[in-house]
Amino acid sequence: MTFDHVALVSKNIKRAIAWYVERWDAKILYQDETWGLIEIGKTKIAFVTPSQHPAHVCFEIKEEFIHKNLTKETFKGHRDGSSSCYVRDPDGNFLEFLYWPPNKKEKNEWIKRYYSNIT
Image (cartoon, rainbow, N blue to C red; front, side):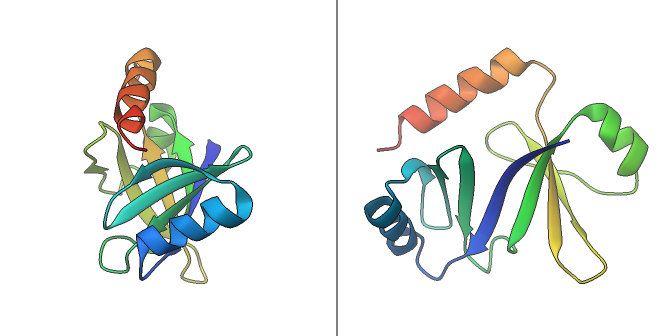
């Protein structure tokens, strides 16, 4: 399990991302009306709308982790080929567990193709 990103709820994705770009020189990895992803240093921050996703901390996991720890959870497929599930901690905070298909090359090619279309 490795840290992937933290997600913050935003009422205006475009405005939030612009602030991080202008103020902290963030790199935009993806942006649409309901979801955005930036990188500052080696840290990714996602911006989500309240109706689409909760604020959360996301960890990338391998299939073995799912079989050992998440067998009762339902994973939802995403447009990028990944899938994930959300779990609440004892205080009600959300953790997202993100799974990519086993072919890492396929993942990296998709990321390059998908994110290269965003400017």
